[in-house]
Structures are given as structure tokens and as C-alpha cells.
Image (cartoon, one colour):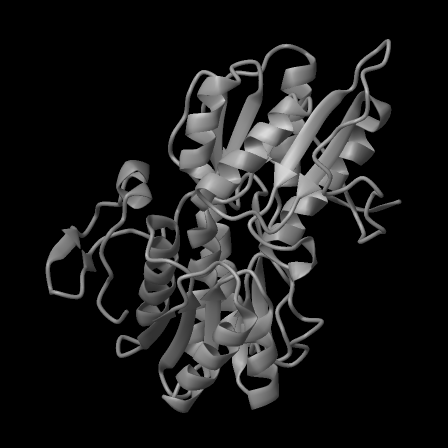
Length: 364
């Protein structure tokens, strides 16, 4: 049962499904036996549960959209709560041995396992999310999450009364670091004295530790929270403590009706559907794709009740500028924590430099 049609990346219009009962076979390794007209067998592997309501949930919406769009031409399954390293390799081999034609690997932590297993199954097409390694049968896809962070940072800089934001983060990898930096730069563009305090969790999802980190940050003066985690714990904590927050990966307003200022929404479906189509018509090729607001890969939830008209107008200007190319979240001058000039005035960071970002800007 389709919900609404979401703007895509100019490849295809995708009907996004509302939450529904999962397929009885979901989570199983084995696909149904081949028929006279074999279905394309597609598997998704997730680092967390589909019920996280965030990153994994958004990827599972893409899986559901694939099944809805192609109907009987495809058969999809997923495996949730997959660990990295040897466990991931084991799951990937079982999926390939079970007949998978295509595997969407949805976590940076799966990248090395995918690279190793892909060599053993050259006939299987692997799609690796948020990685950087490709191969003859491995493609990489990503979203420019940092664009949404720049809009969120703009709101934070204008709305925070303490001038301090708390940031609960998974791992200090470029994907996460660039988000912290984009948020901080945008906030300091509005308030030059703005500070971002970061707590590292060393996991993609750990609700208990995420809540503890959020409470600690609030106790240290943060009146706005954001995170790069997969659960809703930070938003729930913000709602309980009476501070503001930004949703991560999905609209969190259901658990933060007064806390949420906006949320970054990951829209993976257009890319995933287009890639399945390319397998079906024989045009699939490996490569690396990075989609942002302009292509509809990164979206923002409606502004919450605490967003003032001036803050809304400022955030809209950043969003519009990112889409039309007049604003770049990493435009110079950019100075790191040590005082070193990283990007000169009048210049912007290249995609290659953003993808290997290993420093923090002033204020973070």
C-alpha cells in the first residue's frame, strides 16, 4: 500500500511505502526456488534492527519500495543486526550461496567484508553504502548528509541560548567528522562563539549509552542536541529534558513533538530502484555515487514549533543555496582546532578532501 511519492534523483519517481507487516520470509538467508522465469533475488544487510526508526528503517523503506515497484520480477530479503568482520563475511557468503543476485550492504563497517567476499562471487552485484572501495562487481553509494547538517547548524546557531550544542556520535570516521564540522561551521556563521561538544559511543546503535551521553551533554550546558546514531534515544532524551534536538536519518517528531527543530531524512529508494533496474536491463556498472539535496537523496523534515520565523528564513536560504550551488558547507576560510588554515577564503573543499576529512574545525 503506497504512501506518498517522494522526489527522487531524476532517475525515477519512487512510491514510498508506509510501515507494514514484514514479509514472513524477511531475515531468512534462503530465497525461494528458481522458477521458469526466475526472479532477481535481492538481499539487504543491516547493522541494526529495522525497528530503529532511523538509518536502518530508512534503508528498509528502500527495500520495500523495490518490492512494490518491481512486484513479481524481484524477491527481496533482509538480515538485520549484522556484526562487522567475520560475521559480516559469513552472512554475505550465505546470501550468495543461497542464490542472491544482488546485495545492498548498508553500513560503512561492512565495506572490507564486502570487498573480500565479492572476489569469491563475481556473478553477484554488491552495492556498498557510505564506503569508498569499488571493484568490478562492487559499486559504492552515499548521501551528502553534511548538507543537512549545515541547515541544522544554522538553526542551532540562531536558536541556542547557551551557545552550546551536544553531538552524540558513533565513530570518528570521515562520514561522521564531516557532519560535525558542517554543523559547527554553520552554527558559528550565526554565532562566532558557538561551541559543539562531542561524545563518542563507538557503536552505531546503543540507546542506553546514547541517552547517557545526551544527559551528560545537557548537564554541561547544551540546550540543543544532535547525533549521528541509529536510535531515537537522543531525541527522546531531549524531549524529556525540555531541550531542542535534530532528528537523524528520519523524522523523529513522533518521539520529540516539541523537541525536534527539524530532521535529516535519508531517501535511499530512488537510487536503489534505479540500480535494480540496471541489473534487470543489463546496464549495471560499478562506480561511486554521492547524492545530496539537489538530487533528493537528503531531505529535511518540517520545522518544529520552536523554530522562529527569522531562523526558518535563514535555514531556508542555506537549503536553497546548497541546492542551487550558491552555498557550499565547506567554503573557506576554514580553520581547524589547532589554528591551521585548512581552506582559504574564496575556495571550497573538493569531494576527495571531504571524503577523507580527518580534522575538526574550530568550535568542535
